Length: 146
Image 1 (spheres, rainbow, N blue to C red):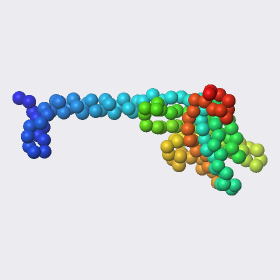
Image 2 (tube, rainbow, N blue to C red; image 1 turned 60 degrees about the horizontal axis):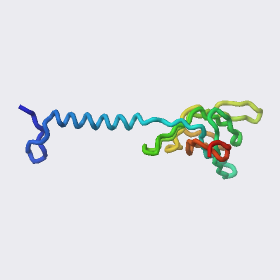
Image 3 (cartoon, helix red, strand yellow; image 1 turned 45 degrees about the horizontal axis):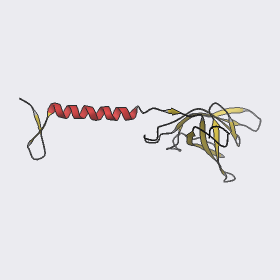
Image 4 (cartoon, rainbow, N blue to C red; image 1 turned 90 degrees about the horizontal axis):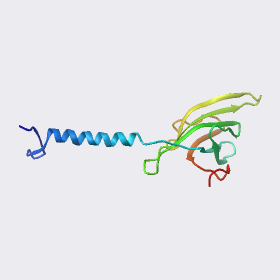
């Protein structure tokens, strides 16, 4: 005898094993979305705000290269994006150092930044804000790619 799950009206509906199989297929579909391939990109695009002057600047940085923004030095280590068919999830692992007035360099941030949540792990500095805007495969600014 098959055990059935009744529907809202009390009628016999799907057998239990069919409902379990449908649930398992749904879990497999969700798991494949969670394991979407990350695309490693050679260029990270940041936006920086100088809170004193109010200037906003967007700039590209090659992975493992260092760029200066005001008193900050940014060095992205990896920049991941997802395929266009997946929901956007752009992340970068970046190290940010501050050059002090006596020319000492001190690390003020080392961690992940997320383009879709710029305030989550942003650089906390009294004069500058810096956040990830994109990961790219080419950069006209840096003369690579297209």
